[in-house]
Amino acid sequence: MSQFSDDTTPITASPGSPFWDSLNCTEELDALDPEDRDGSVCVGSAEDWVLANFGEFFDEDNIPCNILYLVGVIVVARVITYFALIYLNFRST
Image (cartoon, rainbow, N blue to C red; front, side):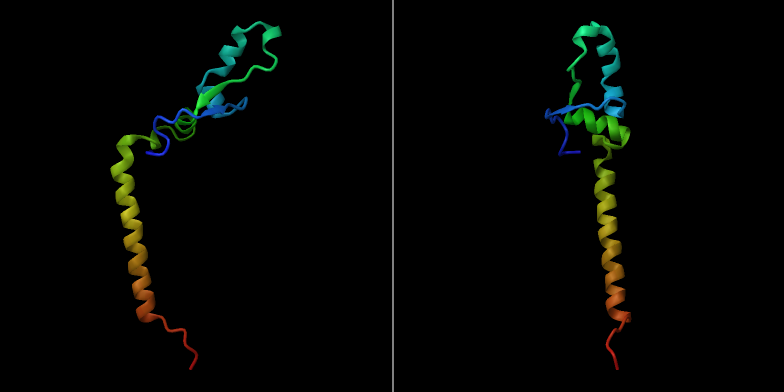
């Protein structure tokens, strides 16, 4: 979340993508004269792209849950590693 919040890097939307639909590019192009449509592009920001593709999962309110999830994964990996080092023996005898 902290990487893309307020990121104004321009990103060109591809026709038919969720990003294209979220920017209402079809309506903008329909409003243009047919002669002006050639070469026209629909551009949004990096933050808009992330919100269009991940929606409510990419929200500042989720940061504490994401931190707890990350800590939980690390703890589980450490516990599994500890027990594997204690109980598994791969020496050939």
